[in-house]
Image (tube, rainbow, N blue to C red; front, side):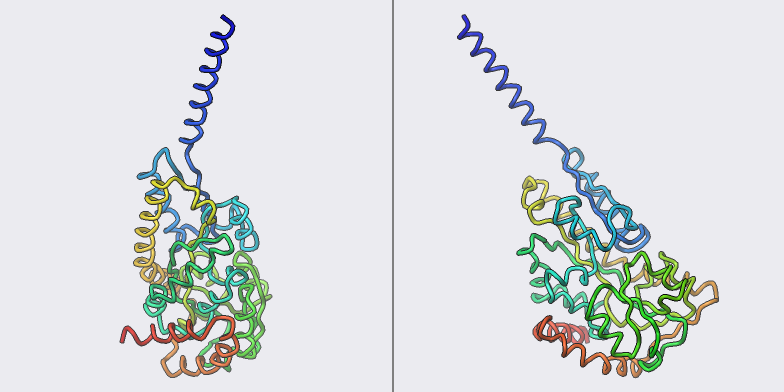
Length: 334
C-alpha cells in the first residue's frame, strides 16, 4: 500500500515538476533596449518601431522595453550593462565599441565619406559586414547598422575653413582619434558625455560641437549655438548590438522572427533618417536666429587635407583595407 502511495506521490511530483518546467519555458522574454537619444530621433523611432512589431508578432513570447534619454543607463555604463545581461539591446555610436574592436574607428574619420549614401554602401559591402560581425569574440553580436544622419558642426563663430576653428573648445566623444582630429585644427578637444553637451555649451565649458541635425534639434543644442555649419564631415550611425550569449540562447522561432523584425526596422530607419534630419534642420532655422553655413566642395577639400595625416596615423589600428573600401564607396555611386 505504501509502495503504491509512494508511486502515486512520485507521479504527482513528476507531473508538478513538468508543469512548472513548461510554465517556466513559456515565460515571456523581456528584451530591454536602452539608448541615450530621444524618441524623436531616428534611433528613438527605430526602437519604438521594434517594440511595436515585437508586440504584434511575438505577443506572449517576447516583449521589448525601451528606455530612451539615458533613463536606464548612460554613455558610461551601457556597454557594461549589456555584457552583464542587464540590457539586451543597444545602438551605440561605433566610438563606444573601439575598446573591443579598434577598426570601428573608420566611422570617426572626418571627411572620409562624401555623404550618407557612400557610408551605407560601405556598410553593406563585404568589408562593412565583416566589421559588423567582428565583435563576437568579446561576447557582442552586431545585428545591423542604423543611420542617424551626417554630422554637422555647431559653433559660436562662423566656420568655413579649418583655420576658423582655431582655439575653439570642441566637445568630442571619449575617443583619442576624435581628439586628435580636433587638435589638428589647432582647437581644443573636450571629452564629454552626450547628455552633458547642452550644459557644456550653455556654460562655455565648450563652444563648439558636432551631431546630426536630429540630435542638435531634439537635445536643443541650437538654443546655445548661433552658427549651424552643414559640413557633413562624418557619418552619424549606430551599430545595433546584443549580448551574444543572450541571442544564441533564444528559442529558434523567437530568434528567427526577431531577426526578421530587426531587418525590416533597419530598412525603415535608414529610409526615414535623412528626411527626419532635414525636417529638424528646417525647424532650427525657422526661428530666424541662426546662420546656416554650407561648406562648398572647395572648402570641404581643405578640411579633408587637414584630416588626411590623421587617417594615416590611425591606419594601423583601423586597417588600410577598410579605408580603401570607404573611399571606393564614395566613387561607387558616381
